[in-house]
Image 1: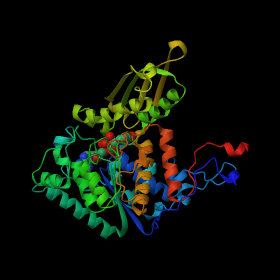
Image 2: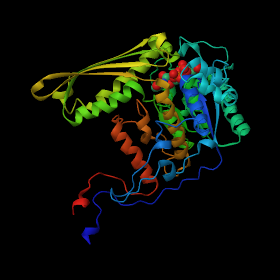
Image 3: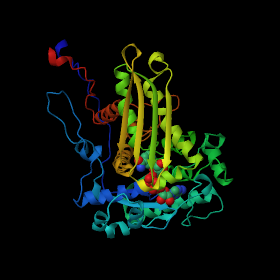
Image 4: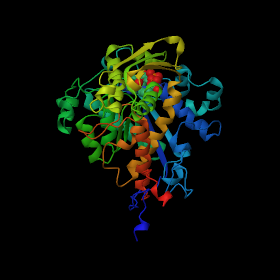
Length: 451
Ligand SMILES: NC(=O)c1ccc[n+]([C@@H]2O[C@H](COP(=O)([O-])OP(=O)(O)OC[C@H]3O[C@@H](n4cnc5c(N)ncnc54)[C@H](O)[C@@H]3O)[C@@H](O)[C@H]2O)c1
């Protein structure tokens, strides 16, 4: 009978096979600075019941299933099999020898009283020697660095670290995430085109292979999922996409979507939805953490700038709306200002126009905390990449576009433009989870309520 057609939702699909989240999940973090230590300390504080995982969709979020009248909204963590926080174990690499307690104290994000409550745990996480080259991060230098005869040798040492950590921590599964500094701007080149070219490049120390690519290569060769939290080129190259698919090691990137870009991807879709015009968006940041210091270097800033600038064009689609968005002045500035530490100020002046072209202004002054916004993103990316690895349908796809929600420059398969609108990204993520479990997708049509 026609009346049985459900107008809100698509039909149920067969659930995909997902292996259970049994045993320990080993989290391997590249770079143990402000973001990494805020994440690690946060997980431990939540495990001890000292604090709540605010900002984390995997820990706090629910997902609506079926009709609005069904009253089914389980927690995401109960709907899909995610690793439990108590089963997470950690290791990291850094160019400084500081353990996680010292690094967190140095980063100055979390207060001493909180860190002291978890001090033995934080002290127990000591970074491994890093693969680092000063030429890619000009304003940093450290001595806790691996030596090797070429980049291939360094990659082998990282692979040995991965196996060593897995064995010593008794982890059943692993995920690697880049929380290290922003590297100098690199463009895709011949050495990134295939596995053969890349491995030859590793042997010949090709300068187009940045340290972040050596970590990613090591992870993917070991079948370990990799997330890229910085705007570096790292896994946005054919060789990594090929390796990711071939070795069932999902990848996601790039650049955590926090602070100012988060605000942009919340506001801009609203302007577009209401057909309000925009002719200027001036964004400036003052921040005083090490990330800000690294971004003083023009090479590293260019990498970040590219990532921050692409957002508006993609959301506003000037090619479809030339009268509204055909002539936008979009400027992004980052200013290193030490007194602020991690407590950034992201200031936006937005020039919009309305009916008959009359101008209006919006000012946003976001006094945010960079690492407090980034830490839950790290947690969710780690847990969702581990889920993707265990899912029969997702593990061989390579790029996990459904994780765009967390990222400033979301990766897609080549040729597809990325989706930046936070609300589309959120819907995409939740519909992916529904799809995995064979639940009808939610289209928000809702006509059946009026039958
Ligand atoms: N905090 C945010 O809101 C946010 C948002 C988007 C992206 N990010 C990116 O996340 C990354 C981390 O940010 P942060 O504030 O923690 O920076 P940070 O400077 O405090 O920490 C980075 C750490 O990485 C280490 N490092 C650098 N190169 C390394 C290498 N090759 N191997 C191992 N370690 C290395 C540094 O010594 C440092 O301890 C940066 O790239 C930043 O751009 C941060």
